[in-house]
Amino acid sequence: MPTIVDLPELIAGLPAERRARFERIFRVDRVIGECRVPEPMRPWVESQFGSVAAVERQDVVRVTNLVTFDGALFNPLRRWRPVMLDEPAHAQLPASHSPAEDLFASPLESTTEDVFGRVRGEHCITASNVARWEGQCAVLIFDEPDPLAFTRAHLRDYFRASLEWARRAHRHDPQARYFVWMWNGGPKGGASIPHAHAQMGLGRGMHYAKVEMLRRAALAYRAQHGANYFDDLLAAHDDVGLGLCAGRLRGFVYLAANRPKDTWIYGHALDDDLADALHDVLRALIARMDMRAFDVGVLMPPLFPLPPSTGSGGEREASAEDWSGFPVIARIGDRGAPEMRSSDIGAIDLYAHNAISIDPFEVRRLLMDDD
Image 1 (spheres, rainbow, N blue to C red):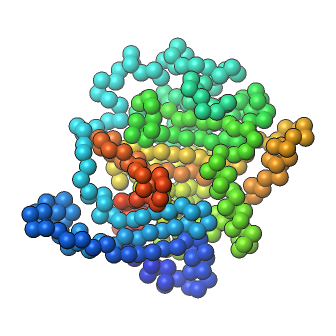
Image 2: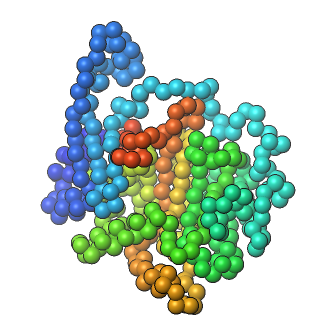
Image 3: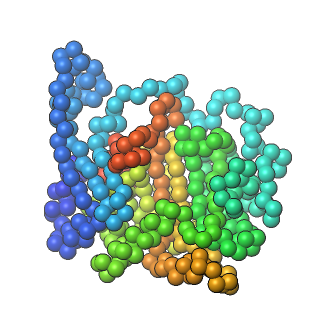
């Protein structure tokens, strides 16, 4: 069973054409980090990390995406580093959580409403975002308050209700057409209210910065190599054993991860196939890798066409955007143990290269339930 440490050998063993494809997307550097453990520290090191030798000589693998300049520093030993913990938090909702304290328990009375009304699904309802981050932005409140208690039927309904909200928002503001869907799974995942909910926005003018950056990087790749970046990205992960199937869709565990367990799923729309694939990946990560706090983002080309042009420069620029070959992408990342006091993100992640403590090959094996 390969590990991230074996990545350079896996690349070297590829046929020439596949190796060239991999290496035009990724640069991989493996280095050895050495230190000395003083005698009084040895019992603690052995207890914490398994052996002194494992600490005194460590392999670190740095992966850089040369197209988007995402980057990850992998050292699975870091998962055993000491952290400060609060009392175990096996449930996402605080023990004191009660309907009276839950702002989302009665959304018709305790949440704001979009001027074009609410969308009611079978398992969810929309609310207008009371502290706005976009002109058109909403909260999708799940009837089930526990972010870990979801089914395929739930996710299908969440996507359907979200699309209906987007249609209504677009009718209200025809210039708003760039859609994003996000789910912060629990407080450790970034949710300000523990009751499970997703957020969505419909922007004007141009897509959100990270989506637009990805589009432009893919266009530059196509211009340089005459190939679809997203197809090649999937193929490169397949070549080293990190591709996966999720329901009717394909995806991979991303080598230039921004969070542990960074998993991508390629879809065609915000539809039942994507909902089912997302459900299966999330359920596997929760059941097999004890993921209890997570983030999900769904990125896609503009959801609606431009309205009839008024001749403004922004509209002309938007009409020239090339989104061909850009899939709908669901992306999942683990945010760490809810009881961990420290943040899972530090200065190195924000300003340099992401430090990742989970081996992506282990993630892929468990997602696909390999022996």
